[in-house]
Image (cartoon, one colour):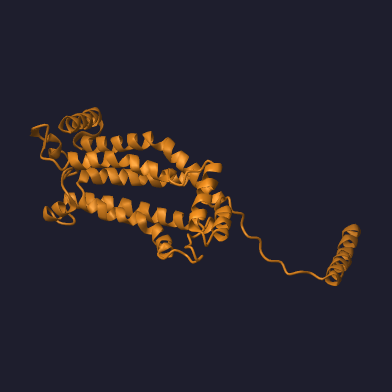
Length: 285
């Protein structure tokens, strides 16, 4: 583990040296952002596959609802039928989890690297690097203790909080639109009643992005940079991959009151009578 962390520290240091002419003292922070972008680029094919899977699962909602209604009193048969449906349509119900799971090791590597005083038996030189006066190994409570909320380090965190809040608000509105356009069939129990807590979970889901604010406040600044960069990438990526998620459902046409045959005949006659003077006036002119 020590050798692995030393190799990872050397990678971050090499990226920082590469970016130093452009970013000067902020080169290590820029290296972390670049590293995050490279990780997200590596898992992007899986994100595209997850988007295709999500769209396929959305199209299966009517069939899923029918199976749950048909086997409401036999949960084992219902689960088997659902698995058979997903297998027949070649849709994995867990494909959306892979991109997030594969990013976790990279985040924990950064967290451990900037939380350790020594790497490979030597002092961790990366802890001396900073972003606009905020140490990359420090946390928000350190920034508040050194300069306060409006100190150099405090302002860095305020900037990160602002970015996360903007991204979370964007995700909230996008998720609400997507859920309104493609409502998911709620899970039901053996008696056909909704599973307790699922309704509350559906309401809370659009707010999950705001939890990143708490994470940014408690992890080292280097790990916070990873979270902010990855969260922003996710927002842009999902906006592109799911841009037609709420266009597939056709808009409801406005209801039209039925017209009786007599009213239709009177309307057509009125149109003909009304058009006559206009045509005659046009010919006269």
